[in-house]
Length: 112
Image 1 (cartoon, rainbow, N blue to C red):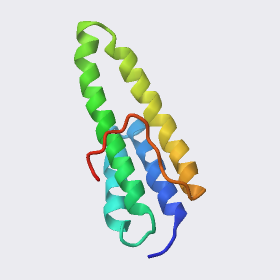
Image 2: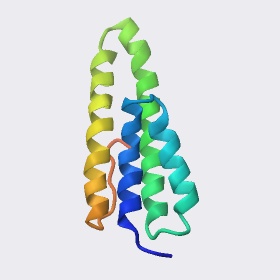
Image 3: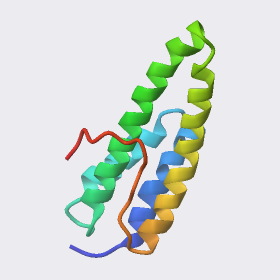
Image 4: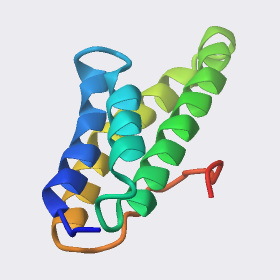
């Protein structure tokens, strides 16, 4: 196993593909995690954190949609999710580059 922080950084930043493609922010990190987790040191931990974050944000967005239709409050939730999905991949890419552990807020732990 080798230590390659650049792959970890790319994996975190690839979540931003959601802004361009709408779904690439889930698919690309998933592929990188599955193909590199046994080759790159700490990739398994970072990949699990990213997948848990992506799944959690998707669930929160699904919950916000009916709230938007019923009360209009879901729009605030969707805006907050958009901000989290933009800011925290960048923060965790910097952490990965510095050799620190990733931390995503409001992330449920589906993959252990």
